[in-house]
Length: 196
Image (cartoon, rainbow, N blue to C red; front, side, top):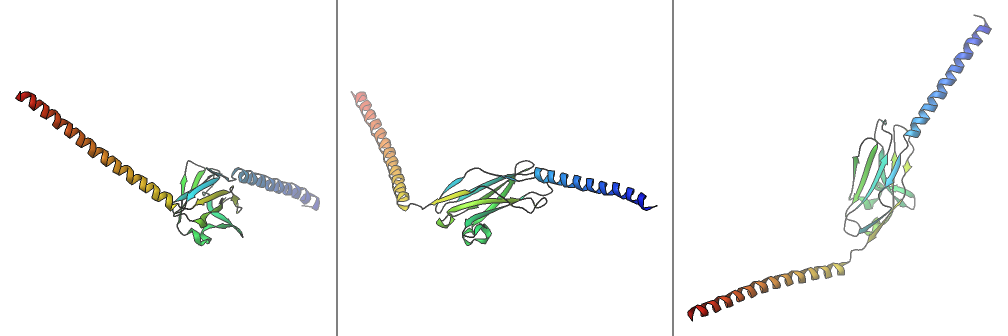
């Protein structure tokens, strides 16, 4: 084979290689675009009471042909950025549960109990599909407002509840005595009429 013929054979092979490379990148780009995560929240502000439990919910939609579900993590805004909760000492008493609602949809629920004032702040859900991309998708920010527990209000509520119970008992006893004395009076009148 002379040089001219080998050049002609090499040209189509290089073109074929370029076409295959272009096609692979186009298909991979299309599948990555198709598999982008979308993070959604039910609320943007959560109100919690000190000492009670509160929860944050994050739902993700992802491509159905993904070989593994997405990784979802929660972080809280600090002076150094959005810090993952396991790295913060205030989040020892927390649980995270995951549930699937059909193919391509997953929800992460973070439960914190008991809530205290250090839990106030801004949280975000982070997600990534490790089989497609190492990039992390950040959800929008959720603000948690923790109100202090009002002991005075609790004591007043307890006092009102006790008074209501006492009032009900007095009314029941009074009703029972009223019906009983009325019955005795009627019986006594009937006996007097019989004796006449």
